[in-house]
Amino acid sequence: MRIGEIAETAGTTAKTLRFYEDQGLLPPAERTPAGYREYTSETVARIDFIHRGQAAGLTLMQIRQILDIRDRGQAPCGHVRDLLDARLTEIEQQLAQLTALRDTIADLRDQAAEPEPESCNPDQVCRYL
Image: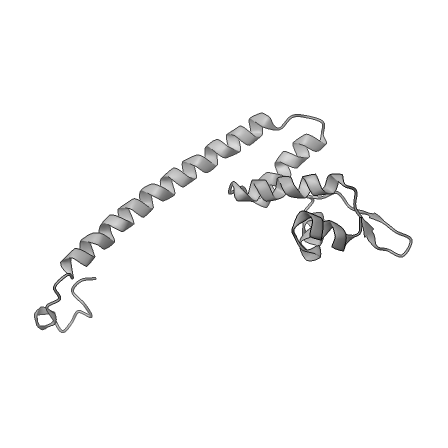
């Protein structure tokens, strides 16, 4: 398949495929005598894996590590589990930070429920922040 065909099949763009190839996520495509890239049907599965990894919040570098392990003929399951554990920990930390921020904003909003502009100090822009 040529680059446009594989891009359409995989739900991506030719530019993205060239980027993935430059980043080592896709092996270099075979070239026709005219210099066009030709991809195999296995490339679609690899692109699908890249997209699933991104949807799970993995970086392209992490996805490349997984692909490198598989390309060496090894099962990357343990490595994937470790990456997902780390990603889950990051998300839990972000959720805790967002919860604290939500509580802070709710408190500020409650303080500003009945604004009293006349009680503001002229040196302050707004006493509620």
